Image (tube, rainbow, N blue to C red; front, top):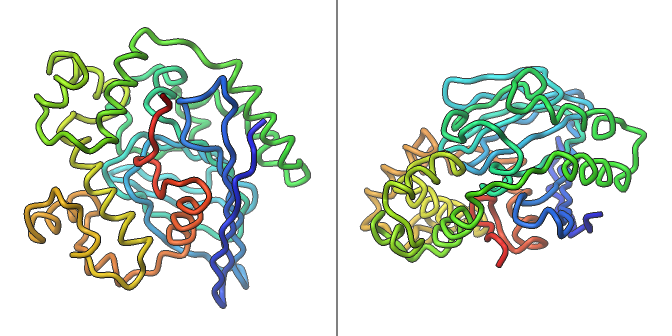
Length: 300
């Protein structure tokens, strides 16, 4: 069973957000970011809106309010089970009072649980119960969407079903090497990344598309951007120039990449309220040690 790792609360006159993070059991190590639970209470039947930053694939189950969400050209509304592929774009959503369970898939988890190439589902959001790549996880709805189930029962259900579904993958050593190299942030050129991983550029491209969802170059750029955005969100009131990763040549380059990954300029993003993401990132960094899924390190 996973262990609770803490909670974060963001209080406002209109809503309350509380988040908890649970460690996947040892035999699932390396497959998932965390198992996470979020409680959202919004006064007077209202809703909140927010943007999720680019991240790995996720499945999310909602008890109570169900979100309306869109990412790229895809949309989903009123589905109890939402699924997303790995993303290089924001997911915009609107949600009212709800209890949500989420499971984030690391690339190793994609390899062991999802039978579709990750780049085929990159930047998509869907009704998981209706999608052939995710439908098998619908079995989790019964307990995760049961308001009478205890947290312990829900975590046990997640662990039990995922253990039954897991299958080994022959590319696991390659996936681990690529993931470690990406998170280290030490490589700026695809050729250098391939050399560090001990594989040809062609093989690196295949592994990245199949299990990570994007080309090696885009993945390196996404890591750099995610480090910058997480730093900004963790230091409210800071300037973008203070949060900007050192690998950016100048602020103009950062602004261009920000617009590509978030579909808006940094100033536009800063002017928006982030009722869910601000609370989630702060709590995640404090109790998990990593502010965003894309920054989570693989084991070993």
